[in-house]
Image (cartoon, rainbow, N blue to C red; front, side, top):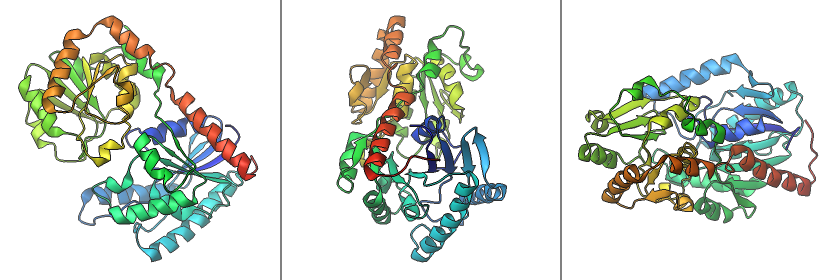
Length: 390
């Protein structure tokens, strides 16, 4: 797909990289794309310092206007009322977004852009931009986020699904659920930046200083430390093997005092995506220690393909999309199975297995995955009779 104009209603720009970032990167190579920052999925808590920081960041971005972030890519922070479930606020936001985004679309010489939506509240933009096509890219079961109102989010998402021209969902369970409301729903599995993560196998790749000095083996994890990360399991691993180093890379969104209390657990915080292969080189095993619940059932962990591209043995709790790689991943249902899985992975691993695991990921690139998505988009657009233009 090339030469298209796209309004991309997404999460916050600059947060930890997710599929939203990787899909955007591919689209922006051959199309004009405006990344529109999130317009709030919940009402802010005025007692929360975190929420106030977000408000000030958004206000600063609003004052900056449209910001170019690539040769054909722009970032825009719209003005809106952060009350996603208020009917009055919804009407006002719809008008504000329509006015502001139409202005930016004209400024960039776009006409009849595609509208790509990554969050349920994007439903309020449908029909406001003279869009040629509406794509809902569903990456999570939003109604199962603990901080969101399940009933209201479900209602918003169902409205979005019914209005969208097509939907892409990143796991089979999500695909089956969304098909109930939009039959034009397709599975869109995650890709991987293969060449980047395969650098973990390059002898020239230097270990980061903060892990190079740690006792071996290093058991590694990267990603946001949220409520679905099984901290009890991580603590159990650390206590059972005090000679191991457990390295957790990513921002903590929940209390992690129990993790900090273990001297062999190292919370390194956020690291840029381009730094992760060097950390993978230090890892003996990559772990995906998630709780087993309805939210996780729908998850497709991007880190799985990243670990494998880096050649790492992987131990994970059960998820539908992880079972696709059961030939290459140890899947553990209990804490004890998880521990045994790590122990066995360390004992059995050999350099040739690293290369085999990495080579198996060569065809799983984001470029290939997004090309498949775009083929669906253009077929749907052609069937709808919408013109292809900037």
